[in-house]
Image (cartoon, rainbow, N blue to C red; front, side, top):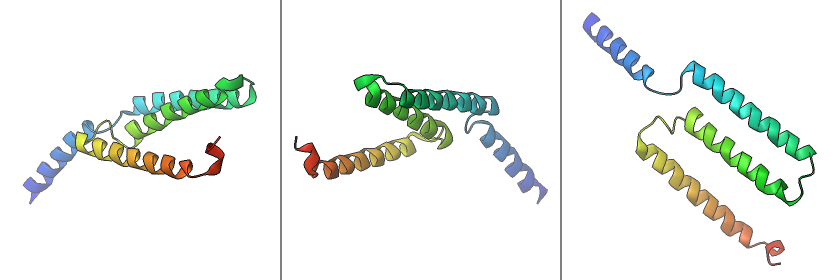
Length: 108
């Protein structure tokens, strides 16, 4: 019975060491996301003209993929899970765009 416990513990330790960011990486990610959020808040108060929306959308995309890659472990999991996530994301965006295209305010 102790053989099973030792084998399981050794396997779990090996698995935990290779799955996900380290504590140091989590701290770096925190400061990265905090800096992007600070830039977003700054952009919302400063008049940058027509670049307002593209800048905010670009920052949003960077934050989204940072959170997905590190906190949802897409970067560290099997490639199949990443592909399934991105297929679902693509379908959701396509449905959202199709739904938005039915509204009259896009008719110009």
